[in-house]
Image (tube, one colour):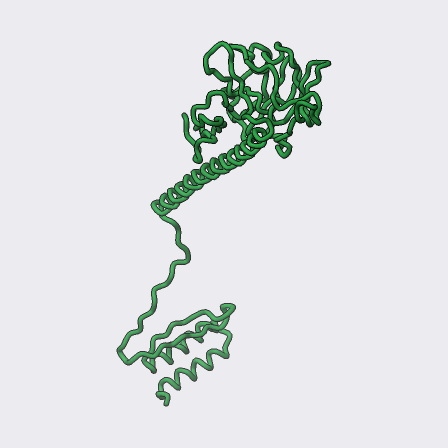
Length: 315
């Protein structure tokens, strides 16, 4: 039941609301205040939608009591300088970890490729031995004891198989992709461009006919499935031929590449990375052969070989 005074005040406010003199929002606020005064409540006025007619949110409390109103939430917040420094440090740390992981992935990938190619050559050498009866010869040098030019070796021609043409004194691979003259000068130019002379004077996996002769079987192509990037070319006297078995992982630093240009006129493509081969006096596999390749990765030389399952860091 309303207090008589409250009824009188509200009646006057009702009359005032019909007048155009006071702003309508002031009248509404006053009316809310009157109701609160007689009910013992705290009035929390709020703007109505569109900001035209005010409304009030009234929370009743006991007479003489109080209402707890939550503090206002700031319109926006910002990072402090310390928080920004922490965020930048975390991002930098993650970037370092990511870069390290990527380098590790790159090294693992390259080593896996080299190991797969090593296995392919080993299979080819085993096939050769079954056909010829011995392992392919290496590039032993005549003037020194047990010296071998393991970089420039005849492994490609031996595993590819050749046909010897006595008319022009030339060996040609079975697939016809490469040839080399049998004259001593030619062998010397290829297999001992500088330093002691080579002992190579011909190839064992060879015949004057691709089908063989009465006294010798035909040569065997043991590297039919090899890809072009596994066969390296050398330029000798401005004539380029397939000459070497190489790893498809090239040598990245041309300033220290395995086969630099020599005074004798032999030149290799940039990054050519041949398989090293020793069969006359292998130190790691005394009863067979040593076969390996070096990979320069992130400044370290990783050696992939047939005597160690894991790559070795040599320097």
